[in-house]
Length: 75
Image (tube, rainbow, N blue to C red; front, top):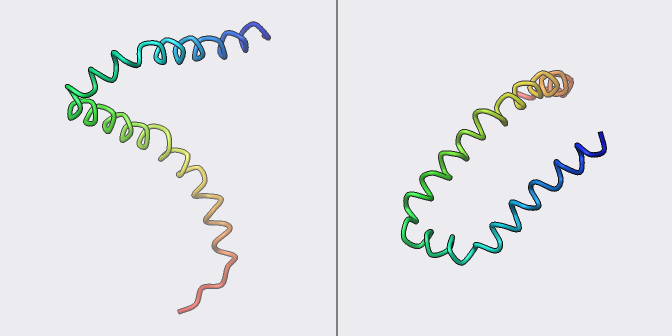
C-alpha cells in the first residue's frame, strides 16, 4: 500500500520535471499554435465542468436544499 502511494506521487513528479526541462520547446510550439491550443484546453475545461463538477453540484444540491428551506423566505 505504501508503494502505491509513493508511485502515485512519483509519476506526476516525473511528468512535471519533464515538462519543466522541455519548456523551451513547448513555449516555441505554443507561439505557433496558440489559437489551436487555447481551443483545445478550453474544450478540456468545459469537459471537466460537465464530467466532474456538475455531478458534485447535483449531490450537494440535496444538502443545500435542506439548508435553504430552513431559512425564512421574504416576499
